[in-house]
Length: 431
Image (tube, rainbow, N blue to C red; front, side, top):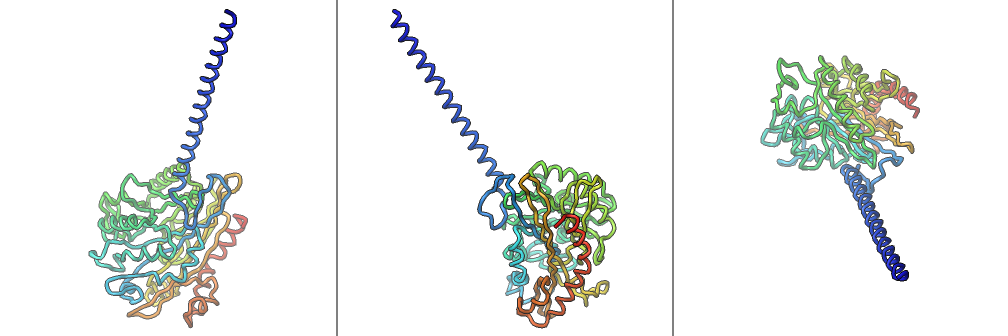
């Protein structure tokens, strides 16, 4: 009887061990499945927006350094539309205009440009000033040469009304180009967060409105209510509502994982060589609200760069008040109020952004490349954007003779405006 009881006890113990081992095995399998699932989710979130040239995903807090470039106003005036350089039959190709910038664009991990026009389509008739409508191929040319992000919040995005406003975003979406500043629907974010080689950079773009007795207006053209709600904008004479919205959007961007935020305002007054009016107070406020860099457009000339310290002294923000024209037909002989050639000048602002081993992401370098718009001819003009950071080498670099003097003059004009600010930038940020 005792032997039988002992055998029964051993059998029951074996059964208990088997059940326990089975439970442990099931728990381990569940844990492994959870780990794999979480990893897949993280990869899915990270993989949505990888910068060009990236072929691997980096853990969210790995040390990393990236570069983000920005260029100014891209404006296709009427002479571009009749240039044989850009037009062949009914087709347009603007790629040649940017060929001397291609290597510089591609040296950066990600590049933004202010697309200061609408893409309303051929049926709306292509046109330059005052109501811009450019061929879709201008977006192709920028993208093919190395521009990644189109900034749409500017005073010409509504030049062809609602249809042009809507079609611009539709074309860019179909071509799978990044854009921000305007939205196709209320469900779309007012900002863009781009995962660039593992660092999540937030981009947000707003334009000034012109006075209107009711509703929103650009250049005096009243927007329909649906489009108005989809454009990021502010009233220069009543900035408090904008500040409230900016604080909310920056907060949302940070909650969504943005580690570095760049604010692109379309602001100021045309042809002013200094930061003008409300722009300095707005820059200060955006620093307080959490913008890490501020890069402006619209004045069509280069304006100074600076460093702004927040009101509580806890943070510093880089600001370039205006990058000037990247490409346009605004020439000294055509603008009586600006005969000095400044409308032919621009800058490319390249930010080096680093996440250190402690997980802190910050600005670790600023490079500014001065540019000049070359034009030859009137009835059938040729245009090139030319980097003039090495003005003495441009003729050998481009194969265009007789331009050294113009490139030196352009570089000198730009350096006169930005040099003192760049000294302050390097001192304040320690690079």
